[in-house]
Image 1 (cartoon, rainbow, N blue to C red):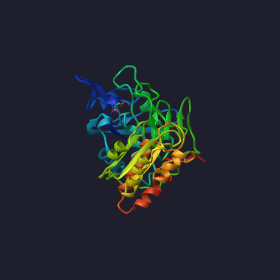
Image 2 (image 1 turned 90 degrees about the horizontal axis):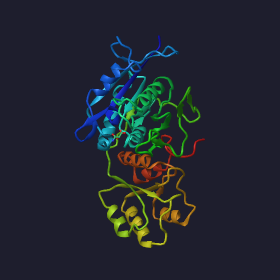
Image 3 (image 1 turned 135 degrees about the horizontal axis):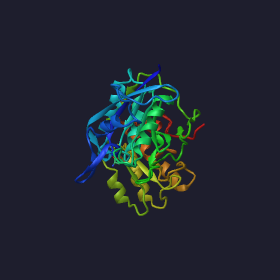
Image 4 (image 1 turned 120 degrees about the horizontal axis):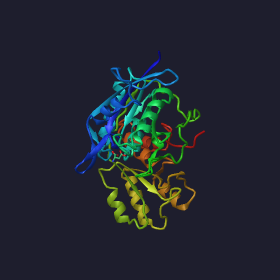
Length: 352
Ligand code: ASP
């Protein structure tokens, strides 16, 4: 009998919420109780949570580790990301795969952060959640969790992924694009790693090779990074106010293929001054698809002011990558600038 052990780290989010006096809030214990009662998620009589055996005969046992403080993901930040990464590393030896249940609002940030922090990852880490709570009759939680458990236990994708609706996206390529639709995530610059339809199809050309394991955590300890959209009418004064110490790095989301105004020398002067003061300035596009480049004079002007192009990275990947690079004391500013534009975890560049 072939058995797979999956550890489900349950951090919070709509998936396990119930209605409270002030709206939907995480409800401790509820999700695990519901899973134990559900024939799709548990075989009665088994001590551990066990999925019903499918036609391939594989037995999938899973443990849900519910976090003591279940969070709406709007309340999560770098310290929570490090906590999840440490839990994965602590259980790497006895676990075949991980599923992380997480609120959808900041899921793409956490998945991106983990893709950088988990060095040598050799097992699947699949984020999922839902837009409608599991306890509601009509929900997307059932399909999302079953799909994530299926991929985690069977698909052999040793990456941080994000599963939603019917697609497994690379975590550091995903963005939440819909606040209410069930197809809530998109990966504008990379096709899905896998799709769950009648069959499960994995795009093996995209899946990265496994790390050498056991996984090591290189944590984010330096969150003094900001991310904001450039907008028409941004004044030098406002820009200058946003680029002050103790900030160490900034991700600017520029227009289209990486443009900003080149007809206002004061704006470019503010950027130059910040770069000269040691701030790592970077930029990615505001668009869902495409890459920043320096074809236009506006893009060239940014490069001249010392702003590093992040190619086709999502803002979520760029922000967490910059935090992670700046957290490593042995890296010089020049290293950080170089590595930011280098593919480290499949987060940038066209697929081969
Ligand atoms: N506000 C919720 C969260 O991100 C939304 C969700 O889970 O869908 O935690």
